[in-house]
Length: 603
Image 1: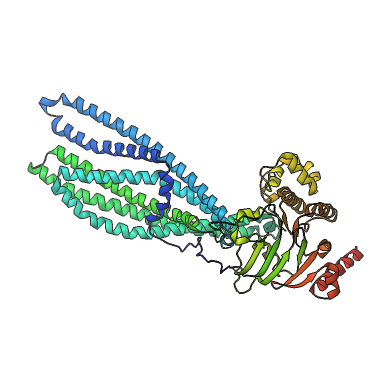
Image 2: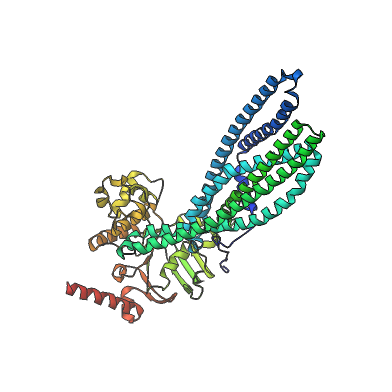
């Protein structure tokens, strides 16, 4: 099967690439709405053109509107100015609406695309990533992109058009004065570009520190009961405050550099304009240039200077957005290590439920020094109940992880119904299995929705039947809204045993041919365990079942027991046969049963 592929950590804050090119992945999202883009560009061009026309009208007023013989032209010139201003106002309003709505639409699509891609990534990605940082990218980073894409890009394009247009009309107005201005541009641009790189680095650092703070807050809120039980409120608050201060310090440095960059740009541009204007005033005094032409040049120079100054300011905002887009792009570029083959093999119908491991070895990427399973070989026949037992770290849960194809083994073959699982579609493979984990996941939804997670198209009657089989209907009916009761985040409103029974009902509803029970009754009291065990016995009839159990009393009825130690199967047989061998299983059983007898005697 080959070695599992390794990939660079997509959440590595040290990852870097070209500055604003990180915004490039956003282009396809925008091009999906070509009509809105065209309307926004048309409004942008109209607003820029109206702005550039104003100095021409002002020149006409100054040079020709105040003469004794042409006073009647004043009304006409000012009427034209009102029309131009009206066009400017209308086109600016349209530009704002189209651009903002386009930005909102693009970012909504971006968030959906990032989340959809996250759902396709295999567990190894999340083994290396903190959930809080991922959430930060979906929220804070997309908000940063929206602010830039919805406003900053529009302002940047508008000022770029104004700058180019103003420079062109400056040259048309006075080639000599324009030459002086253009000679000053390299002196202005070079230091701005150099400092802009530092701004980008600081912006990325600020976003990374904010993500760190968000990740820590998510972790702390999720463990609030443990935090309070150990009296760690003050220390947790202090650590979060330190994380926030780190984020603030990074943001302060970034903002300070942007402020210096903006101020420097404005001073250099304005100072050059003032110098050129002084030189032009000499021409007016000498009679080689009219006051209207100089006024026209002044206005175009001011437009060019202000546009360039805003461009430098917006450039800093775009650099921040580029950092956020880069981080989102890293998630979108992350490739799942578990994928369906180009031509997946179909699993046989009807399903038989056979499972086989042949010389399987696997090591978790985060624990390369110690194999989780080594040269593992066993098979499970259709309808057979097989229990996996052994000390912690023996590799029992890894068997489930590999069978569900959350990871690919480094060597060996795993088959389900005779088909190698890496040759099948992972979705089709997992559809044949129902998992009841030791720590079930309960969503912040209603009871019915949590059970329906096993089969989204299930009817209310089917949901209730599954709950009855899982011995969960009695406590569900006692809830304030019955099956419509919200369970809170991670099921905080339920006891451990109730959460486990919801998970069992979910697996019952899925009705898969292969059951994977990972300590499925571990959180139940004796009475509930007996009821659920009866339900599980009914459910397991005719189905292939793999059971992980530490409580050996719950697996005496298994057809076979596989005893694992250090990633290998060291014993195999029935409960009675293994007890007679006086091996690892017998030792574990004696420890448990003797301990239980002593506790009962003490009580």
